Length: 500
Image 1 (tube, rainbow, N blue to C red):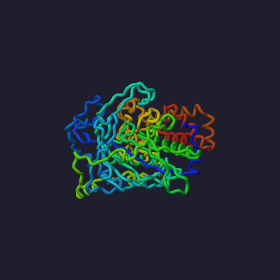
Image 2 (tube, rainbow, N blue to C red; image 1 turned 90 degrees about the vertical axis):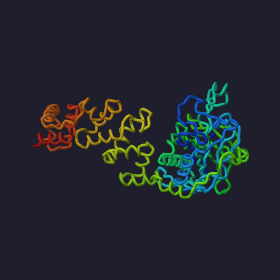
Image 3 (cartoon, rainbow, N blue to C red; image 1 turned 90 degrees about the horizontal axis):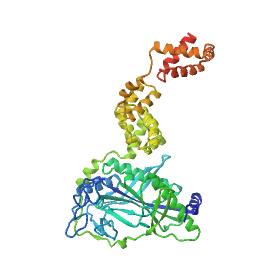
């Protein structure tokens, strides 16, 4: 099926209700792997961070990572889950080249956290509750690099390279219950859920959750059912979607694809699918296995995990303020709308704005510079806001110089430009570039006299009582002073000279 074969989104929703299930894998930020002492540091030479345990060699026995369990409990608590008083690991059996043991150590019917929920806020402020089925512990696979094909996938490749450094890195898989009732907003709900989950994971400090680096990825399960029917349709699973935008696009595409197949009398195949960033489409991967195909059985080499209730309560008491509650508080403190807060969230600016306020800036100024000039620069360069070569303290200093009247907005933008270019702190850039506002009456008076002489007709209008014309003379003075004049004082001097 091509993109042009899709049913329109409106026609799809006119006949069918979408039902989603989202499975999010989060790589934990532990120093060592889940069941051995190998390093998890990124960027090492291929196959240099492996040992007999994570390679599955005979006689090597696993030992569970304590911080991995602690992180899993924290995630479960933050997701309003029940925490198991006793649970076990299981072997999930399947052959795949990037699984050196030929099974994955995971959890099956006894997850560490279950039966929770996460409230997510949509663009218009509506809050949608996503029910959580489970959050369970497991290990990541190795990395396959397919060589010789046009797409980078195994189909058409001449050979593949395997790197087992990632095999065994701790993962938490968070699985939702079927998400019903979202209707036409289902793709938006999917995006908002993954975005909120990412913010929660980062707030807990258990992972950086950088989707572009594979530290967090989402499998989007989707099915359609005709309006009024209770039974779910056959689902497809789009695997390893690694950006918020792609989560939304893949859900939207699958709604349109399923609807086109069903409305033409076809049958949906239960399968995994690949998402294509270039056009937002998905293509078939493999027939989707059922749980029984994996022959789960309890892991005989690991003892059960039994978190003590007292320890769980200690972790609960130590949880940070969670993202949605924090945003509601900050929205009130900053005096902004839901839309403005959502924009700051989407830009990754909330922590930066908060840190700038902590450095002494007022909320309006901090938001203004991060969401204005700095967001523009980030968009132009393709960088994240947090990656820009400027700190919250430096932004706060720029705001302070503006508040003191030493800079106007135009000069402040030049100072920010200099800081980003590596010319030093704001005060150093001001000094090197000679950017301070000119407020000395003698210097300004000369510029005002020149502007009046150059614009005699405008001056006559002001003498005749047309005060609005003063703007033209102020602009002329700003031009003569290279934008460094104090505009308020210039206006006062113009009116004094022409009406005094």
